[in-house]
Amino acid sequence: MAKIQKQLMITSIFSKSKPINFIIVFFITLLAFIVGRIGLPTEEVTTLLVLEEFGLFCVCYASILLVNFIVSKNSLSGKSNYEILLFSLFLFSLTQTTSNINILFSNFFVLLGLRRVISLRSQIQMNKKLFDAAFWFAIAALFYFWAILFFILILVSLALYNDIKVNHWFIPFTGVGAVFVITSAVSIVYYDSFFDTFKSLPEVSFNFNSYNSASYIIAITILLSFGIWSSFYYIKSIKEKKKAFRVSFKSILLSAIIGSAIVVLSPIKDGSEFLFVFAPLAIVIANYIEIIEENWFKETFLAILFILPFALLLL
Image (cartoon, rainbow, N blue to C red):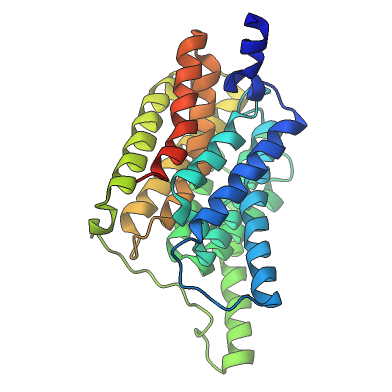
């Protein structure tokens, strides 16, 4: 009986990478996506609308798979799947993050850029990786301007690696420049103007009144509390990592800080801006869950995050 109960625990299911984990996460993401559309302005159901919604869901789920790839490829956690479970639960806790098309695409390109930044660890094909990272971050900024803040990751990573090659510091700017030139060219061809394709502008708002509801307050408070608590242990654990991996772990923490800055600066605070925080926060908390020795505390910690989105549906 005890053995059966142990197998039913959430931590036991996701403590190792298994196909069933991705199926569970798929349905949690699907549920988050469906719930996120409740209350949105209704549209006539057409084939085109169904295809568009299916495409957006694919972007959501692909983002989760991309996070899993980044983590497993760069050994950013153990052989668990906690990060994908947490990412899907975050989406379900703040379902507004599935409704903003621009932010969905922007975050996906940010993750592509983050993947290249983390891969700098190998010190192989540095020129290509630096260009790619800047290129993807610049593409992300076309969809949501403040995503350009992730460009800081490239410069900080170079500094942490003590890179003194001048061309390595110059290449990221060529990546951003390439996106600017291509976008301007497309704008001239289609709109006969240089800047009509630059739809995302550097607007700022510090009005947080839209978060003044029970569901927002509870979700943000729990995610923030768990994130800060886990960060203390995450920072402490970086010193115990192999030297070659330390910059990668620091980059994840910096990504969470940048994502939080985007939430603060976001001109329209409808909850969707929290999506930029989810990936690095999931990795940070996943690392903390893995080092918890008391099984009951580990199970309780994860159970709260698991129950949270379902409880919020009742508010």
